[in-house]
Length: 262
Image 1 (cartoon, rainbow, N blue to C red):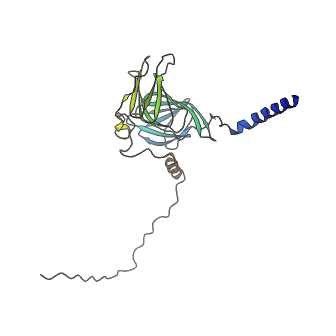
Image 2 (spheres, rainbow, N blue to C red):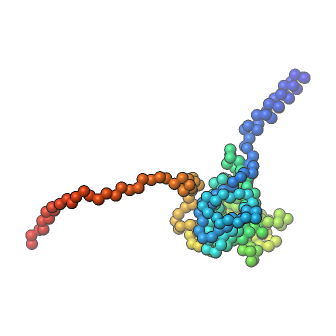
């Protein structure tokens, strides 16, 4: 019996040493959460007590605030391949960003303090909060709009599904919003039941439409395409200049054209 117990203990100890090798690596804090990939108009990155104009390839970090001005927009690519587009007169705070390079798994929380945000979610663990709402999404495309004046949050799903509840966990009521639907959260009320939404504006128009604007009929560029464009922008290719050469001399060309007789 003692031998069997000893074997069992050794087996358990061996399993404890092997198991971490096969389990998914946990996400941890990283120096860089993402990059700015496009800016239109005026946007500012606030980091602690410093402010700087947002430019392409600017690094984004945990706790950064991104603020856009009138008629402005900024697109950001994060390490888990999530693409966030912030509309005009909006403010987004990267509240939490943990990332595992091995599994490309991220745990992120973004706070939309004001304005409109369009999210293309790259991995699980993606959450967005406003002063009134909490939204959790996985592998989906959705927009979220917070009106600071009315204290109302509207969430519209373009693809996949999003779980929505009031930011106050003590307020009961959770709604699952699927593609083509929207839900609203106001004050201390639970989210409204999902209703059909006009998502045709999800890919066109201006920032007042349901979705964030891109060219009509075009899809969101794949993350690897954006990465390639960023690489080319950073490592500008040394292309040879075109060769311009004047001809050495004039060459006479005789053209015999015959017209049909009437």
